[in-house]
Image 1 (spheres, one colour):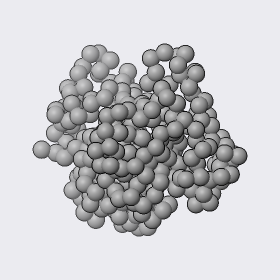
Image 2 (spheres, rainbow, N blue to C red; image 1 turned 90 degrees about the vertical axis):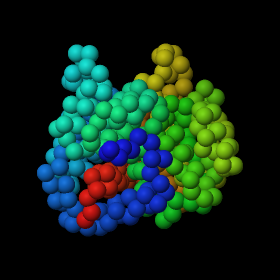
Image 3 (cartoon, rainbow, N blue to C red; image 1 turned 60 degrees about the vertical axis):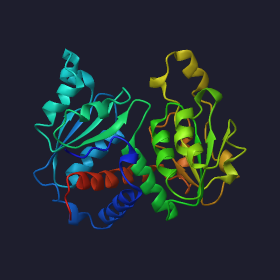
Image 4 (cartoon, rainbow, N blue to C red; image 1 turned 180 degrees about the horizontal axis):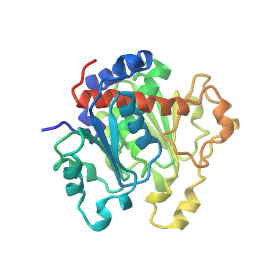
Length: 306
């Protein structure tokens, strides 16, 4: 059976550390990897819109010397004719060596994996999980801080529907001496099941607040998120909550000099453009890191050693 990555916990801590080491080597020695996936094909099955994740996967495979096929929206696939996701994936797995799949329904990549003859990577399923964004975040933290333990990280914004937040909390809960600060409106708090599974069951310290400025001085890492319009059931609630937190240079005055600011992107209003000039802003580095870690993951799942 092919190995699939549906949840970041499908990877052990040792395997995550190995992927980070490979990604670091790719950034240093890109020419060494340029033909690693020659004659291999990646299929990108995106049933939900994406810019960074889809292009990052495509760029990663091309940089490895492979090729790419697929679609970028459900309407351009046979699902618009009523074909099941399982049949779509089974068909595409006959053409490709590995599949990256995004779907608006939680659990869809897991269900699809039952029909695939090749490895499937979950590229985001609804408000549930986004393991390759988490690997991107872990690589960025490691490059910024030199470690994946012993710091305080604040998550700010939409913690209820934010699949990137859920995945990263799950991943970091496996490292030592991490403290979590959860900043959100009451309506967008981190789901209870995530807290129970990743924090309370392991006695990991965390605090919840609605006030970012009251806790920003404590943070080593600030992970900003957008309020996700596409997850809301009504427009009124979205409009009421969408600008709950806007990070500005003024709000960073009390932050640590070595704070690292992350954001999975896209941003809407939650980080002022003026913050881009702050040396603590790491989200554009995060974008670049996404390509390198996905290159490392593709190599691992295809069992290619360079």
